[in-house]
Image (cartoon, rainbow, N blue to C red; front, side):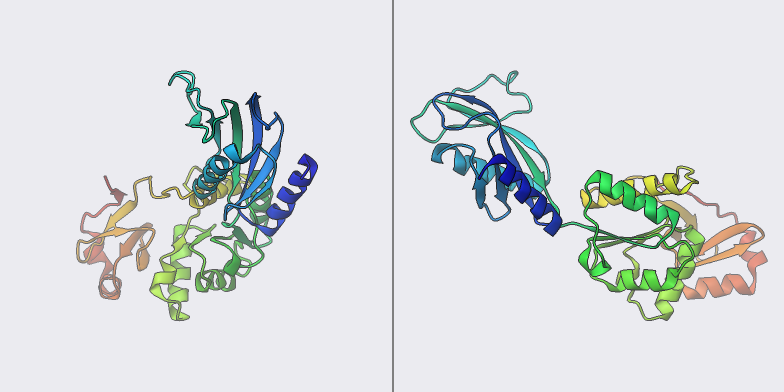
Length: 299
C-alpha cells in the first residue's frame, strides 16, 4: 500500500468507528528496509496493512501498536540492538531487534480508540456547541444512545423526560445531563415512577461537569465536554469532594447529587435518603429545620 492508500484506509476506519493505530517511521539507520515516512495501519486484531520494514520489525511493531490501541496512548518506539542511555531514551520505548541485522528503526504509533462514542440528545445551543467541540476533539458521535458509551442529554427543557428515559433505558455506561441539581432530582423521581430501575438511574450525572459558573451555551458545553472526555478516557469524575448534607430527621449524611428527595423550606434545600424521613419533615418542617444541620463538603 502507498502512503496515500494507508491514509485513505485510516479515514474509512474512522468513519466506521474501528479501533486502529497509524504507524509512521520517523528514523531509519541502515541496514534496514524501512525508510523515513513509511506508514502502516495496525488493526486491533494485529492485522498490519502497509510497509514499515521487514519481518525483523513487524512483530515488534504489531505488539506495540496493539498495546497502544488498548491504552489509548501514543508512543515512540525504537527497535535496535544498540541500546541508548536512559537519558537519551527518555519518552522512547526500546525493543531489541529480533534478527541478525544491526539496523535501527524508530516509529511513532498513534492509536485511535473509536469504539467509545458519544450521543448528544437535544437541539439546543448548548447541544450544538457540544457537537462542535466533539468534532474538534475527534470524539465520534453516535446517532442513538444504544450505540454510545456516553450519552449527553442537552435538551434543556425541550423534551427532557423522553430524552432522559431513552438514555437511561439504553445499555450506555454513563448518562450526563445539563440540568440543575433540583431539576435532576425531580427527573429522577419521574424516572422511578415510570419504572426505570434504580441501578440505571444511578448512572445519571447531573449537573454535567463541575460548577465553574458557566453561563453561555459555549461555556456550558466546554465544561460538559471536559466531563465527557474524562469518561471516555476512563478518568474518575468524582475527584472533587461530594457535596454532603445531613438529613435533619435521622442524621444520616446524604450526597446531594443522589438524594432520594429534596425539600425547599424557607429558602433552604433539605436532602433526604428515604421516603419516611421526607414525609416526617413535610409534616413538621419547623421542628426539623431548627436542628442545626448544614451542608458541607466531605473530606
